[in-house]
Length: 104
Image (cartoon, rainbow, N blue to C red; front, side, top):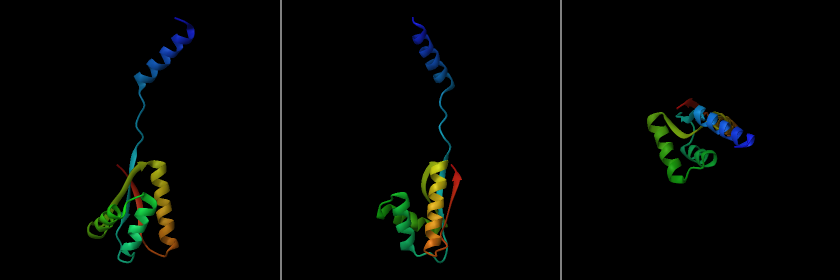
């Protein structure tokens, strides 16, 4: 066995022994309020979370009746970006819709 092969085997063995840890996942959640129009919420879900009209409507109804709705599950960086984008979009359109994230 050559030195190169030996190094490769060691690297593979070490890598598989230690394993790769899955990244932590975070739920992105929209919160209900009494002022944001339902159609704005549906549009936001379609725009930022790539939901279909039916999926967005169902999530919007969960938000309306249950107080919150899960928009998706993402790694930390993506979840933070989604929260920032949705909150900025809501403020730009003068709606109090709030988006947050929590560890899954």
